[in-house]
Image 1 (tube, one colour):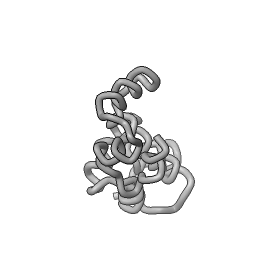
Image 2 (spheres, helix red, strand yellow):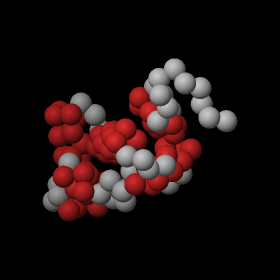
Image 3 (cartoon, helix red, strand yellow):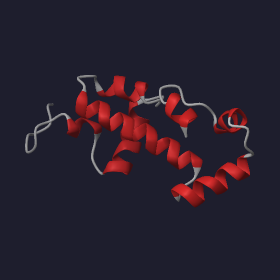
Image 4 (cartoon, helix red, strand yellow):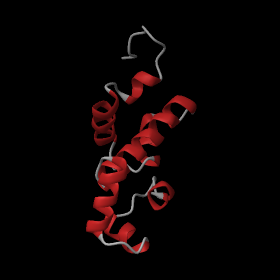
Length: 103
């Protein structure tokens, strides 16, 4: 988990994380499912999306900058993942409640 937290902007392949942690992939998967009730990949993605949500709420960075800082390769991939995770778009966190989107 600490390796994942340290590499949010440039996500490491899970195989490399397992090697650095000196743990077999199957063992890591079992541990994640037992403790966190999700796969390592799901946890890593969730961690990156939570980091992005915090940045959107607490910074003036553009959505594209937040996407890049949280390790997404495109704004569209980031927006899809964000909407799936949180039920709203990244830009909706920037608009005052009840206001219309800017054209």
